[in-house]
Image 1 (cartoon, rainbow, N blue to C red):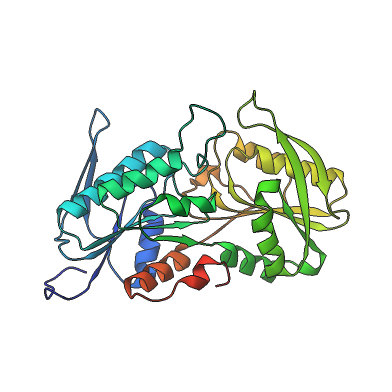
Image 2 (image 1 turned 45 degrees about the horizontal axis):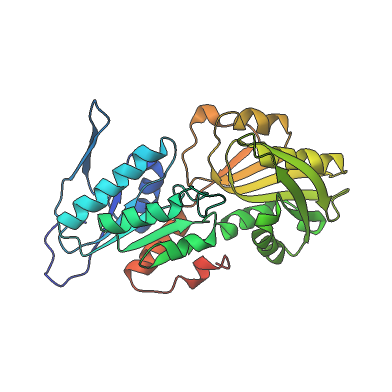
Length: 325
C-alpha cells in the first residue's frame, strides 16, 4: 500500500506486532495488501522501540497483535505501535486483538480487586485507538469498556462449519463446561440443531486454576458430546468436564474452543483426557512442539480479513457479530 496518495483518498494500511506474524500475513494475503514494514526492537532492559518504514499520514490503520505469553510484552508493543501511528497522523486506528488481553478480569469478585479488562480498553484509547476488533470476548460486557466502536466477532461459524463436515450432529449433544457458558452453548445448539447439556462445577477458591466437577444436567449417555468454550488455558476445566461425561456414558467427547492459550500442563492433560478431537482456531500461535495428533487448528484469518474489509469500506459486519455468518 505504499506510494503517493491524493490528500482525500482513503487508503488501508495493515500492521503487525511480533507475537503472531503468521496470522497477520495470512490476513494480508487474503486482502491482497502488504504488511507495512516495521522496525521493532526489544532493548536489553526489555523496553520496546517501534518505527514504521513508510509514511502513514491519513491512512486507515489496522494493527494486528495476538496476546500470547508474555501477554504484557505484546500488549505494550501494540500500545506503542498505536501511539506511533497517532503521532504520525494516521487518520483512523483500529486495534485488532483476536484474543483480548486480561479479558477474564472483567469485574470485581471481591474488594480491592482491579477490573483489568477495563484498564486495557482505557490504555488503547489513551494511546490513540479509535476502534477495537476482537474475537469471542470472554465477557460481552467488555464491549462497553471502550469509548468507541468495538467489533466483537464470533468464531462459531468457523468451528461449526468444520464440525458438520466431519461428524453426524444428529447424535451429538453440545455441552457447556459451566453455567457461565450456557448462552454460547445454546447458540451452538441452534447452529447444529442438537440437544444441550450443562456441567455444574464449583471452584475451590484456595487453589488457582482448579475446579471440582459435581453433576451433569442433560442426556449424554451414548451421545457424542461436544464441549464448547471460548478458550483452553491450563485445560483443567475442560478435561475434568470430559472425565465427567465419560463417567456418565458419553460415546465420545470432542472439544471446540476459539482461543488455544494452552498454558503449563494443558497439552499433557488434553492428551490424557483422550478427546476424540480438540478443535481450536489460530487466534494465538501454537508452536509445533505444543501440537498433538488430536489437535485441529482452523484459521480465523478469513473472518478477520472480511471484518477489516467491511470496516474499511463502511460496510455491514452484523452477521460477524452474532455468529450467523
